[in-house]
Length: 159
Image (cartoon, rainbow, N blue to C red):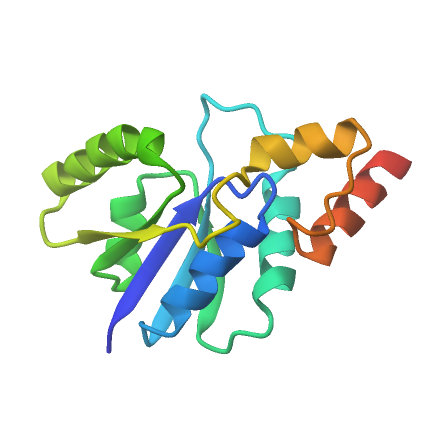
């Protein structure tokens, strides 16, 4: 059984992320979407909100589960029995960072491979940062995020 893990901040999850999740779910028997906590980042959404948005976005995929970690992704992958880490590439500018991250992960555990998925056409400009910027400047985000993200933004901003 082939298992993979797709880590990210998912602050919030976008249709670009969802595209990679759906494509990877067709390749792997089990796919874990891992909401990661990076203490050097400032998140808009809490870990609970990010997990809930991811769960809502992937509920149509039977072989995908959402998990979270505040540790190293390679350790979480090993814990879950995954031998592949999925990473997305939007543009050439992503490659250098992802290459260094892949090399670091290989240094930590060389039994876990990294597999890169290129963004699908039309989804390469979507980032969580852009989504937040669009939302707070009253730009319609309904074409770039799952509905649960819009609902979560609205609920958070009603408080």
